[in-house]
Length: 136
Image (cartoon, rainbow, N blue to C red; front, side, top):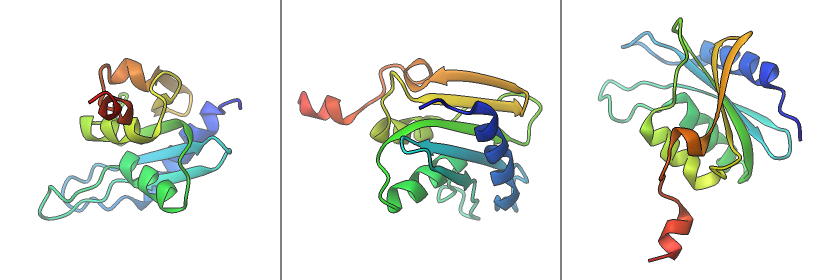
């Protein structure tokens, strides 16, 4: 399946509109593409205790998994910044649980016209996977 990066970027930007960010005021949106072509949006959701805060990428993954999805091809990430916003380490590890690091594409959105794309493996070399557990 061909990945429409512009559509995913637009969906990530739209996802920011639902962010709950009363403390940082820094919105992040993500658009996750399943192998079947369905897009799940996610936004960051803050909490006064800070550690229960959830990133946009994990919100999108958790929504999709809770609906029975287990196969993903790409995610676009857009934030309230004038630069590219990379996923945090926790989000990269969650992506490792469900995505093929060699083929899963992470699209960073500076604007709908300015995109950078990486594989999960490139952004998270040596990530811990279910395959690693099988080796133990």
